[in-house]
Image 1 (cartoon, rainbow, N blue to C red):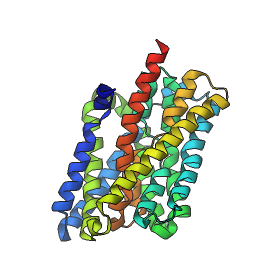
Image 2: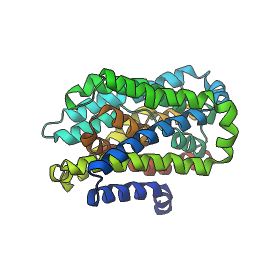
Image 3: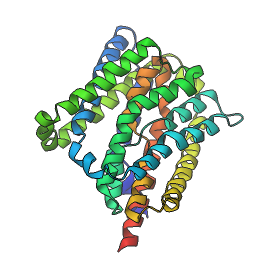
Length: 319
């Protein structure tokens, strides 16, 4: 069990935590903040361009026939999760900043890479996982901002004309362009996965630094004591446990085969850091982004550790 937990720990979370620490000590200010804002916008464009370029049409077609499975995954991602988020946000005595961050977390699409990887480890239906996770990410470009505007308007999320323009120009258009160019650049992307991964993750680190810099300048750590971080971690564990149990049970109730239940378990229970950070940057004022994505960062690591252990356990059951 200890070895499983060690292998589940994502070294990237150390880079994220280091970025937050650096922004806390040396936040970007003045002209530097403006430069980082522009750089973060460019990073978001690059991030979604790469998301589009990595999306395989062949894998989607191969897994698209499992429509009941995909509907179930979308239902847990964009219906069950938000309902649980509303329940958490309504808990009496829950600090407003924690409530906002937890609710935003529940509105995000599923991960792609880790959902597929865990499905493969657990010997699930990999083609269907590629389809479910990819469609969730694509739909999230539209659904997450809409849900955030409807459910979090009072917390600062906005679907004004300028935010819609940002969504189109920074998220949708780069994604569509990257996917449209896949026949041309798909080979390059496949051959240089490691380099693309560094660009992908580096873009997120830049956006995180910019977001936390603005939040620190606005007094983030004076408004968010350490005990609230512990509260966020505890709520994240409970949230993940509830959704894992619900997705596994729902798969059985719908009569899915074991391989498809595994897809629903992993694709329906996780939230995307890669999509969540830039979407938050588009929807929320700069000073709020750092606070809003804190629960997402904690949930991200918790989900990786838990799902790695579960995936290996399911694989052992099949032997």
